[in-house]
Length: 459
Image (cartoon, rainbow, N blue to C red):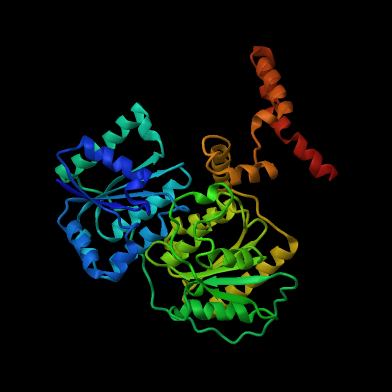
């Protein structure tokens, strides 16, 4: 049996994820595993089609593919994303047909599910036989119980290949339409006031619908708003996963390219940001992924706090709820407010015109009001994962985060709420008395709403 391993870490052999692959290889000597550092070698694979074809030929001669990667901003890193784009751009899909596939990730379990959903969907698009995923916490390999669990995953993956198990597709093909957006002329009516509005796009003039949607959005405002093409920003390369930024938020690229100045001077200083781009496979483009990944020099700090964000998307977003969840979760964890999405899916230009107009109005209205929707599970759980990790084992790595979290009161652990602890302790004792418990249970509903009734009546 031959398995092609596609390593999605920019660190190559030095990645945490690869240690799991090497452990699998050690414990399965009967399996021939060929490891390809596709994320680390992405520039060569882009420029040298011969190298790319050699890799594809190895996949074609394999029985299965293992997609192995660390988590980068809710997904795989931009370099890995670019490799996936190359598969489709260069017509290499046939080499993946009917190959068994599995995905292996390492992370702190922060939105690891969205990354696996993405890879699963890509495998379905390539008509592979997806056999499952394994999301390992970074240092699970140090624990005997976790090593045994991981080896069971490897064993079951091999067993499925040997037995030629029938797999089930989870993701239907995305249905793109050929609609071309033709906007009506717009009379400017939205006064941005003191709000600084910024539109970020990767489309340039290549995607007609996005270019026209941006034009329509700009036409809504009484004064000129700034539009920046990410392709014009000097971004020297993708995030390397080196964590040099952990101590003081200084990236190894600082002084070598223009990303930091762009992010500090444009993104952080904007009040309203519109993200505009076309879907590419099951995400936006790898250029957009590069934008998000490189912003990690801010580490786990909510650097978009208070900003209003809107999206202009070309593509079937309604068919891709994983992408919608990724974008929504990103904004919640970054402290921003999602004002809305506008896509070209309606297929009716007048409808899109109206939606863009409404989005422009909402962005300014919410910004002026400083309105922020309450976070959902996505933002609340995500921030707590960061909080606990920075308080604990990752503090010495991300000291910049630790200082920020302390300064902004983000260490909101229950153990500091002594009043609640004492009340819970006393009530626990009382509830152990049958008569008290029976009396209290009868009044649960009344007690639950009593403080709210007071507000309704008196505030």
